[in-house]
Image (cartoon, rainbow, N blue to C red):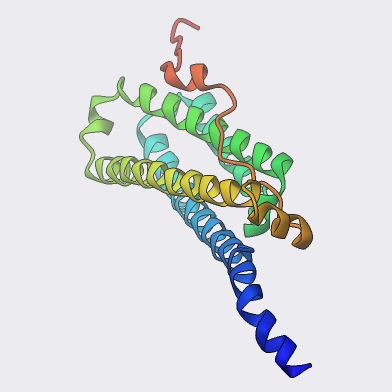
Length: 196
């Protein structure tokens, strides 16, 4: 019996190394790590919003609707329980993406309104917050791209033969990528009407 095992071992080793189990585990962790960084950057942006709103409020009190819109959008973002497990739930990813899109839109409207207040634009605190927000938006973009790439590598692995067999056996499914609900809408600047 021992001789038979020793003879079969060289035949089984290539099969075991080609099953992809370890690659799937490694890539799954890579997706979770990349998603955690996306969440980290979105949280950084959400943390900047109250200070930004407070600073603008001091100069532009009459823009209550815009300020309220930003505050409400931030509240909706904060109401989503964003966890690493979210990457396995397309519906949760969609809700998260939609809430973040609403906050992005509200912040864009706020920054358009700011253009009408030269004294606000020259305020050091506002300029600092605006620079931090712009830097955070860049970090969000980089983090989302890394997440999208990690999901792509993982999804290719769980869909390719023979690792797809291992993925099926252990219940690893394709993960949703980060998407934007309406790409055309985010490409256009927000419309602001002061004629009211």
